[in-house]
Length: 255
DNA sequence: ATGGCTGAACTATTCAGA
Image (tube, rainbow, N blue to C red):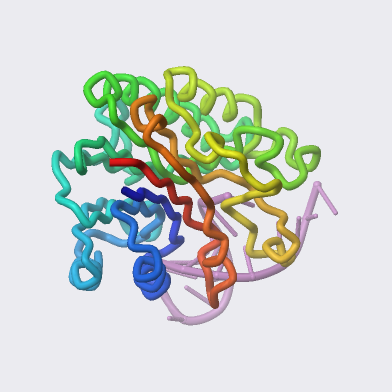
């Protein structure tokens, strides 16, 4: 069983990339973020053709998340029931006995801004809700664009990023709070090469210079972490023509 | 410190992302 997450940065623009990637990487479950599509425009037929059932919740211009699956999707939940939010950032579903939570966590802009306050409130409410979900579902995976680089080794230049959004102490503490509940970072269960990132700015040739951040993550409960045999970031997509600024993260789980 | 890319929106310039 392979599960994955990818911020596609507009599903309209990236549909061909998504289909190409799924053909080469026929994962069982893929969580996508930033679809930027209202539900009436979601490409249900194209993804069905590719062998995927879908659940989605979107809005115009911003946000929007979806779960693609080769197996039946059950008990779909849109948004965090503990957090009133017009922005479509969370979708949860049960697939193959696992609770899959797809999340597009807020950007936060900068410390002190309204958006930062929103991000921190959103993360606090997420923790409360995930605690409840974990109690009900021992096999839970929280996949998505966290917009948080948890450690210095997840940032190309930690000094440059000190106190910048994605790497501020409160954000990192919020992510640690999720780990403290027993969730484990699938990527760090294994020895990894150095300087592995999942996002690179479009500007200043950041990808070619590998000036990136690791902000897309797959967190697993103990039961799933014990069954996880591999996790990697597929940076190849970032080399494609007109790419998403994020790369997919893939985890392999024993049945 | 700034601006640099990209996508989406009442197609031209602004907002938002990270």
